[in-house]
Image 1 (cartoon, rainbow, N blue to C red):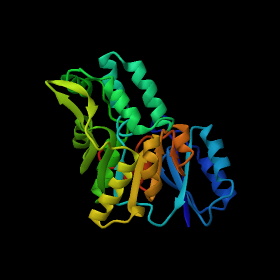
Image 2: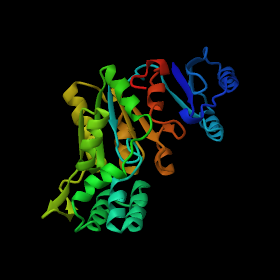
Image 3: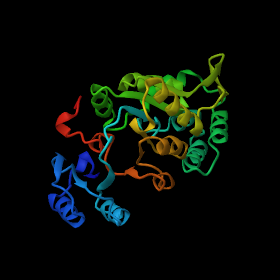
Image 4: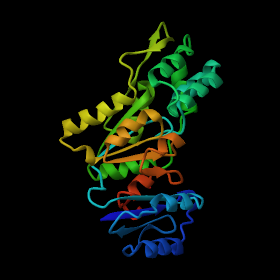
Amino acid sequence: MYIATLLTSPNSATLEPSLVENLRNAWGGGDAQWLAPDEAAEFALDAMPDNRWDVWADLQSMSVDLVIQPAEGRCKKMLLADMDSTMIQQECIDELADEAGVGDRVKNITERAMNGELDFDGALTERVGLLKGLDEGVISKVLAERITLMPGGRTLLATMKAHGTYAALVSGGFTAFTAKVAAELGFDENRANTLLVADGALTGDVGRPILGREAKVQALKEITARLGLAHDDVMAVGDGANDLGMLGLAGAGVALHAKPTVAAECDIRINHGDLTALLYIQGYAKTEFVGI
């Protein structure tokens, strides 16, 4: 048994009942259940439709996301999340680079790294090298003035944790940022790279080992083993090439507003919804959300 979920942006809730009914009829699905009026609905299917991705592409042109997944076990016990452009709306290293006057150079490297065009470790050390000499006080300034949370994040964390979910923030960014974001949103733990500082300024290097793609996979393995969970119990979410390992290993790997090369490798792609989409695809109705 499968569940098909259709959803759209909460800011422009335009999911037409007729669209849901037409698709349900075409695929011979069960009765539609509305998780949020005009925003999210689901129905059961006996089999995975052959034209799934053709329909997905058509719905994308209508600003509607479609997710089809097995019904069994879709409500997860652990959330493993990337931070930059996932739980926050920015790339923290790009914001630091702006303050250092090397924003354009660093943003170009970041974009290529997230698309999988560059080795993550090499790209990170190159970008951090361009920050050498930056006053460490700039980190607090960027956190206060430039970093904003991704819409739906507070509700996602509050709702999943109210149901006993364990939440870990695992980032290729920096601990100075993950510590604050994790505390603000309610993550149980966070892992990231450490910017090295000497005499009140960034040295232009990061602590070793570098936390990249394989470290995110390792985090999933270590945390599930510690908690006695299976990999299938995990929902992972990210947007960049360095997230693909954990997205592929998790029971539900969500590409959130991801780079096209990343989304193409994931079965769950959220391009229009916000982070509350991760609740809808687990079967939570909006009336069950916590903290809205």
